Amino acid sequence: MKWAKRLFKTLFNVTVAVSVVIILALAPIGPLDQAKNRLGIWAYQEGHYDAAYAVFLLLDSYGYGPAQNNLGVLQNLGLGTKQRFHEAFLRYEKAAEAGVAAAKYNLGRLYQRGVGAPWDVERARSLFEEAAAEGDPFALMMIASFAGIERKPGWEQRVEEAYRRAAQAGLAEAQFGLGLFYYDRQAKSAPDRRVLEWWHNAAKRDHAGAQTGLSRLFDGDDAAVLHWRRLAANNGDPAAQFELGQMYERGTGLKQDLAQAAHWYRRAAFSEIRRGNPPAREDLLYAYRHPDVRPPLHNALQKATTALADLHVAGRGVPQDSMEAFQLYRRAASMGWGEAAMKLAELFIAGQGVERDLEFAARWLRIAVDLGHDKAKSRLQAIEAQRRSEPQTGKPDA
Image (tube, rainbow, N blue to C red; front, side, top):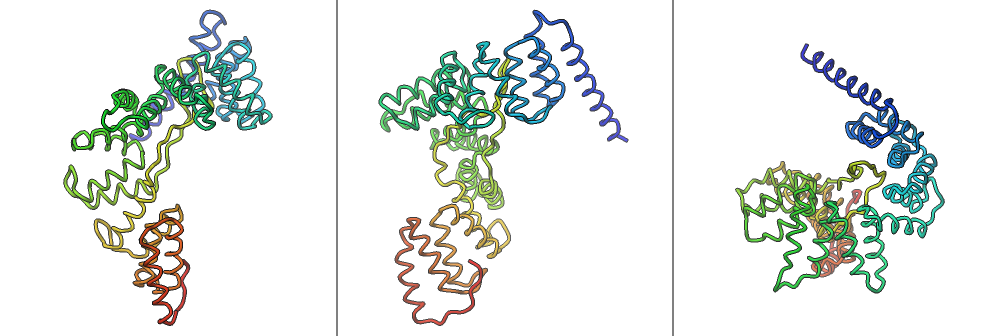
């Protein structure tokens, strides 16, 4: 009956937590507004959305700006209540008029998306600028994003300044972005120590991209590379997962383990970059993430999918399965990876996992050529010559 005891304990804890929230929320309005607002945020973070909604709704009725913003977030996301974008818009407006910077950011995102408000990018930009001027880190990230996309004169200074202010506020994504900004501009002969500083700050806050970046900065130090790469891989970074798979496959910096290589290739191949809601600040919630700063993945998803297919072709670390390899190569090729299209063609040429068919082989080779694969052109010419001398057979679905 252990499960019954655990269930009872869980229900008891939830009941107590919700009761505490309600009792404190119903206490007289006054100096405790901020404490009660934080209590609502705690309930939100613990997943007690109904209780959080009740707290914020009560504080909203007394015009407490941060709670109006937070109530708008719950209405925006449909947590503890039905999703009502227009109601969220009205709450954000009230909070923004009361000077709540986070509400200006949230309101700007509604205008930017045209949800619950007319689509109006210029109005959104104006709200982001107001919030950024008040130091809101999420709005500062939006300012950096706009500047980086538009690239008007002086854009680099605006991007650096926005990143710096958001990074100094403790936002890991901004710390990573600022480090990446310096990384892209550093001289090879004199690496910029600011890259290490800001990425290390972001990595301590569990930012996977920064952890992957650090693994590359420490190239040559196998222990440091493995430390940071493993952290990033466990945090879901596909580039780190692919690179860790390579380390296991080649036995670089650790003992060769083909099963582990296949495991990490598969995680990278089918990974999804995590995009949860942004973390709550002390008094405020946000409905939308700030823009993610993402360097090129160096085709990590495609490379990992192709590497996993290679293991299935050879039966290394995984069962030999040409049909599984065929599906993986096709998946990578559909993502624009010429190497995978080339290898699909080789499967048709050899009749491995599919019926031998030079016409389909030529089709995939043409795709590989279009995707810029250097060797595919000469291989295509050879196959075209071979096709003219051989009769064609049935054609499976390519």
